[in-house]
Amino acid sequence: MTLRQFAGLGALLSLVMPGLALAEEAAAPVLNSGDTAWMLTATALVLFMTIPGLALFYGGMVRSKNVLSVMMQCFAITGLISVLWVVYGYSLAFDTTGMEQGVVNFNSFVGGLSKAFLAGVTPASLTSSAALFPEAVFITFQMTFAIITPALIVGAFAERMKFSAMLIFMAIWFTLVYAPIAHMVWSGNGGLMWDWGVLDFAGGTVVHINAGIAGLVACLVLGKRKGFPTTPMAPHNLGYTLMGAAMLWIGWFGFNAGSAAAANGTAGMAMLVTQIATAAAALGWMFAEWLTHGKPSALGIASGVVAGLVAITPAAGTVGPMGALVIGLVAGVICYFCATSLKRKLGYDDSLDAFGVHGIGGIVGAILTGVFAAPALGGFGTVEDIGAQVWIQAKGVGFTVIYTAIVTYVILKVLDLVMGLRVNEEEESVGLDLAQHNERGYNL
Image (tube, helix red, strand yellow):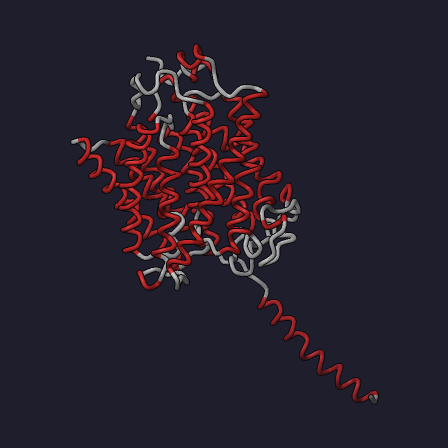
């Protein structure tokens, strides 16, 4: 190459390189302010579901001598899980190191620790090239899911578990059960249930089946409350419960529509089907109770609301309005009979129906997602073979039930041997407010 040719090439490159640099800069992910604003809002709504929503919902259903203990548990779990999420929970749930689609290895079940203590997270970190909002917002959004899941379990053993034992149980359960299940379902290619094709848009499996089964195991291991079922244990303040249910209903729009991870059409449809299913379930529970007991109750319609919210959660991103109507109606009726007739028949003391509503509602929603996500039935998923997808959904439900039940049982039995799980009879009679916290909910 002559000197003149070399100089000409240099001049050409000097013209081309800025254009290449601009093209590369244009191709780089850029934060989307609309998506960011929506995800910030959704995150606040999901936290609102636990405090104050769930705290009031559960607080109203217990006896007056235990109202503070239940609210205290919700608040303490919020603090505990927030810290654990930052230290290692986010990494265990969403670190994708070592994952490979179609290959089952250790990282198919749980993430690594490359994100422990939120290593590498900066204000400029984006979630991904597809979801253009800060990773810090995604971390906080998912943290709120990790908070509410163990808080839901509280409803199964309310009024009889030691506060110290509850804290240690929740920390271990979060580590060994919640984080791995979240990783298997949501972490992406290489996650066990992700690779199976399990559809769980916003947590029917990760949150509700997980918490419901853990709650059932916990109430069986701890045993029944003193006097159950012969002693009346009516809710002490259904006004609290209705207000809590209303807060859960509103907050759930962040839960479901926020799981679209963008301010887009999927979020809009998720919001619509959430409203439809919840309304249908509330009416389904109310009319089922009306027909069987002669009168509709406030507690019943509040429980129906939550059953509908639970059932539509796994389906919210893939089903259409008519599918949501069916899912909600079916969930309301089935959860009503499971939370009343089944509980009485089998005799377990699921204090506030954590299993009857969240466990059963989550299972109903997960299975019906496989049906109504099909475009042939008005869905927006990619389901072509409904039977095959229902089998995949059932497989995901079955794995979650078995894994959660076994690990929860082992954790509880070990803790019972080491420190004891339950308050003594005198403390239970006095109430956990005074016995565990030296406070009263009411000074009248």
